[in-house]
Image 1 (cartoon, helix red, strand yellow):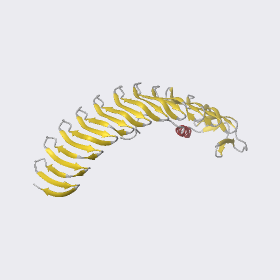
Image 2 (image 1 turned 90 degrees about the horizontal axis):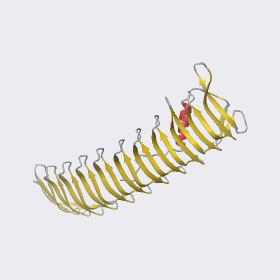
Image 3 (image 1 turned 30 degrees about the vertical axis):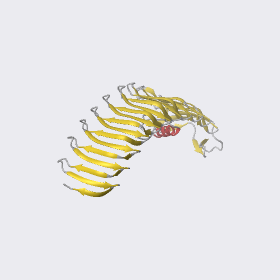
Image 4 (image 1 turned 180 degrees about the vertical axis):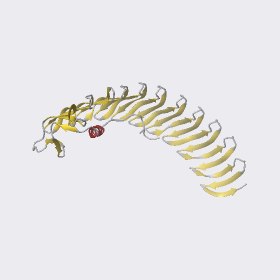
Length: 333
């Protein structure tokens, strides 16, 4: 396994927020502006149309009533500009007057509270973040449309830092883990919607380091392995859903070392082999599910060397003799 990239956690960035605002604005009904503004230059400064100096003031936009063909009294947005840059709270509303989004700026940079709201039948908070000089800082929280908290993440200078947690829509904890500078640290847990454990993983600086365990939905163990600095290390065991051991392999810093064994789902031994530094060494045996032999092979430095016997399910035997991976003799039935 490699560095975890499927963990159940995420970070919302300035880019995501900007995209969200653009999607929101482009999906709205026709609006009327209190000031006709255009945006120019690399800094995208606001100017009143025809003006030579950047705009300072509060721009209020209203929805346009398409039925009455006139300006409505429903605000769309209220944004204050200082020298062409957003400054202070930028507020957005849904057509029914309920709040939709809040962004707080200091001289054109996100600084302060950022929030969005679900605007269906009942207005509930969807997201709340805090920014310092354009970077997420402190606790970021997310809710579903029914008001159930889904995620809570601690942030530092735009990176996950500290405890992150996730919940199901019924309020059951489904994820918990610590981060440092956006890298997973320590022990992380995943649970199902009933709170039963699904996965336990230990990290150091974003790498698997220590215990990695997984469970089936019924609570039976599925995986039990150990990592050292991102590499499998020690005994690795895997189980079938019925609880029968599926395989048992030993590793040393990512390379197979020692005995490897596999079983069929009914518990019948399927395969055994020996490894040294990740290479097959010595005897390897395999069996059919009925317990009859399938093969006996010998290896030296991962190459077939010596006698190899193969059996069909009917019991017919073929014999090969190898020297450093090359066939030097064979006998057919």
